[in-house]
Image (cartoon, rainbow, N blue to C red; front, top):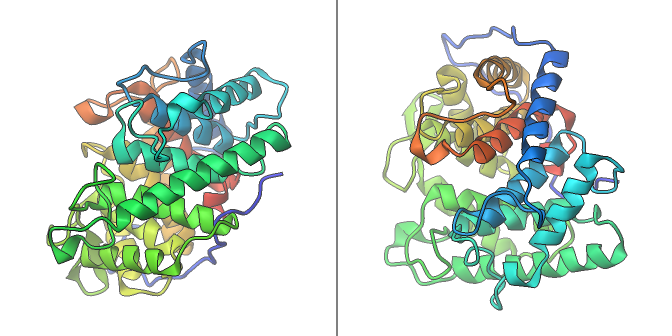
Length: 349
């Protein structure tokens, strides 16, 4: 049984900005399901003998964790007696190996994924609590998640070189600066851990939210967005990520939520953005959490763009270097298309 590890977020009505598009025509649910299952089939075909996807030096921990979350979001579970269930069991066995995590609780060393990968793996572990194949594995998942969360908390408290970086994270646990992209993965992990019953200091969440607020810029009346760092202008991907982070931290009625939701409603998915898949994952989940017109418009837009962009062999990829890896792009596309199923706790309102 999937446990509600993240706080349940009530649908929030936010006033529509003038001129916002309100078209809701998207692909039929059955067509979306076909796209998702074709993507899952592709991921299954890419699994290595040890249960991972990718290779060391190519973010293997992070890619395997993303694969697990994307398959869970599509309705597959490790307990299933299916090819997909076996893939999930093998993937969890890989992530839980002793050589994947170092003595400090860090997942970012063994595969070169740094704090990005550490946040992704930690979030996956927290989301998987209660879905282990037996009590022993559940206990191991909790121990590994606890060690990974403690690493995140220590990294947040690293001395920063400027006040604007306080409360955030960057590439390494010892980094003395911060950026929003890395920070959001850590925030999601902390909230997932808290909702799973782990002890997370409230001050850590408050400090992270303060960093997010410093990364926000208003661009008009009830409009604005999040930049990569405090002082930088809003972007599609970072605005979507910042919006979701604020929501899971319970800041439902803050001006940053209203402004960024309206900004994204007007902007829509940016297909040619170099971080399109990353941004669209956050966009789909965040706008679903906002609810109302924002959710309906986003679901239709994401369904249209991702359905049209899927390769006939089931995968997605990008013309941009950072998102060219088809495993990564396919995982993010599946996660974005599967929001409405609520199988992952993070998707629950």
